[in-house]
Length: 187
Image 1: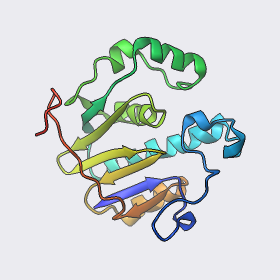
Image 2: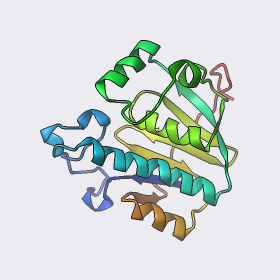
Image 3: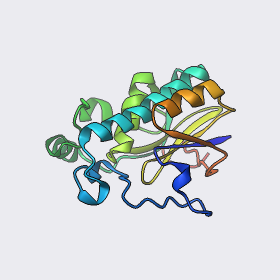
Image 4: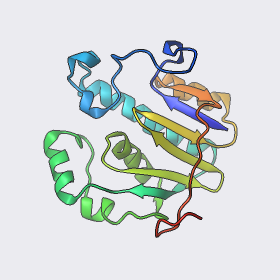
């Protein structure tokens, strides 16, 4: 089953499923912009934390302690990350580019702490990857959409995620995941 987990209220969608509230922020770069109701960093970080904690809840339910990186996209350099630190994109995230980012490759196994950090970096549009295990996948779409493909979640887990302010929609956005080896070749 694929779950779409987002901050977007499904009641604000049209019949085709398109989200209609154009004043809803969708990126860290929307902080402080009037067209997005002047979202501040604290509100942004609260939602980002909800995403990271939601994944931890799901991994705990599924007894998964690590995930593998797949379809990694690292297009930013050490200098880019230094600029992200200066412009606030990495506020409250301690990132060592050389020892945490530059070493990443398809197939790298991440523990729970690393997974939560990578989720934050994905949401902050500094890196991109899928995270997977044999029967479990996390993918990200544009504009703060997160998809989790796994066996059916317990209602208690869904309730805990929703108490964090997110919406869990089952059977939404079935996604095709292309798995690649360490060299980027489809397997």
